[in-house]
Figure 1 (tube, rainbow, N blue to C red):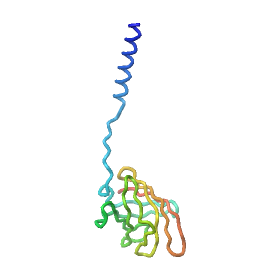
Figure 2 (cartoon, helix red, strand yellow; figure 1 turned 135 degrees about the vertical axis):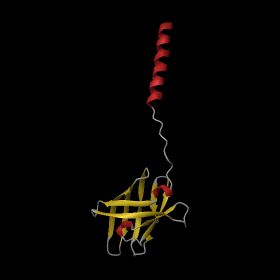
Figure 3 (cartoon, rainbow, N blue to C red; figure 1 turned 90 degrees about the vertical axis):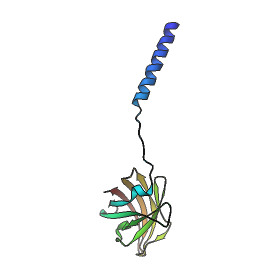
Figure 4 (cartoon, rainbow, N blue to C red; figure 1 turned 135 degrees about the horizontal axis):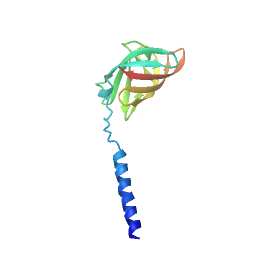
Length: 136
């Protein structure tokens, strides 16, 4: 019985040692809107288009960002998005300065990738768009 107890103790210690050694200590940086600012390369799968956008902090909103050239609409056209957790959400039925209405959201991965799904209503057509933003 003592011998079995020793083996159980030995295997328990080894198991704990192996488990603790295999764990990686990863320190994740909390996502904030400052980490998203900068220039991003956009690839739209639906239109097979590529272009750049610039993400800026929206000083009027505590968790907001401005996305210049959203949907390839031009550098003077900015969409407003709000960061909650790892999701960027466009303002619901946002009317851009070029008269397009946009809706949708993007899932942020780390600080270098955003997978977007949004719609654009240009007054003539409603288009669903899938796009990937990669930070430059």
